[in-house]
Length: 573
Image (tube, rainbow, N blue to C red):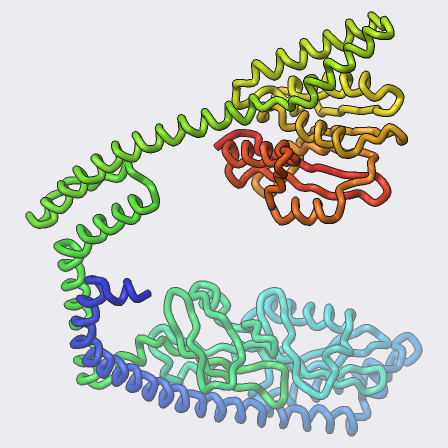
């Protein structure tokens, strides 16, 4: 972080910003404050108009409520209208006719309502006023919507409030009251409610609309979808919304129904009403920012970009990428000299590091060869002693087998000057070694080697598995107890992909706790007699070949013996 603050880029930016930013900040803050003041004033003014108009709507709807309640309580024709028509033909028809005349007369007294209606549940008959709509088709569509509602679940609309009724072609406000077996109600076209709102100045592209309580638009649906306006409720005086164009949104809820009035005013229409000086301050702020970006652009081309390329090249070189070179481009003379000098210096260092690396690599190759050629002298002497004892008892068949196993063993040992051998060859060598040990410990040692097909040809370091098995024979075999050794080689999933998992188990007494703690701690427990040199040999070879990607773990299984787990990547880096 200190290096960044001390960089040339930061100091140059800081100097310019120290001069320009305070001025621009004052102008921007003043401009933003002015815009907010105007927005609040416009929002408050229009919210007051919405509140006044909503109060007028609620008052008209309340008058209609009172009329409907009086109608259901006082008009006796409702009693005859709900009687079965087949049993009371004349009474029913007279009641129906008088009800139609009554609601037709009432509709002229309530200009805010489009129709009154009455529905007989008993006779499934609807009567309503005919003084609305511009055509028979429009009136019939409303009638069908009312019948659909009355045949469905009319109780959801018969609460104490006005409810939004959605039809196929339009929306409306519905008031429904039940009196015995008769429903009485009123319906108002949503478009009729919006007519007075057209007198409010909401800008050329502004709009007023009705929504449900869930803010589902009743009117202006095309505009809402086109402009990407998100209708939502907020405790603030207004909300800024819209994708293509921003709008100020204000709303007012009805006390008489589950609907709201929403006003949308284009934000740019409000900006046009700002004073001239506010616009001047905006232009000054924009001009200062343009000047700042122009200055920074020029400085970037002349100084910062060449400097950045040089810094990036130096960081890559620091991370070990010695193929980094700076392109000779048209820039200042000073940077051309720096670039040429840098390229020449990196080339010389690169050649020097290659020579050092090759020398180190040859040293590692020699060390690997020496580690792989280590032969346990005790094994050699024990093998000769076994042949001698077999010759004493004249067991020529076992002498032949032992000699053949030793020939195969030493042929493999002397050809392991390769860094890697196929896994199947290493396991065959290990099986040959275990057979030699079976001849040494007859009826005591048994073994099992399993290998999946997908890992047979995968190459691993030679003598790794045999060294672990040799260590097991040395420390776990007891002439008084039989022992079994199991080897499993398989492909396994790791966080980095796939790897080879090799598990060596025995049924002996396991690792002593002190030795196990030492192995977990990574200590090199090599005594003066050469104890544990095999394990140290394996760790050293794996570290030289795989760095940190190879793993070897040691553990004891409860009641089963020792377990050595080797995990090797599929390839050497």
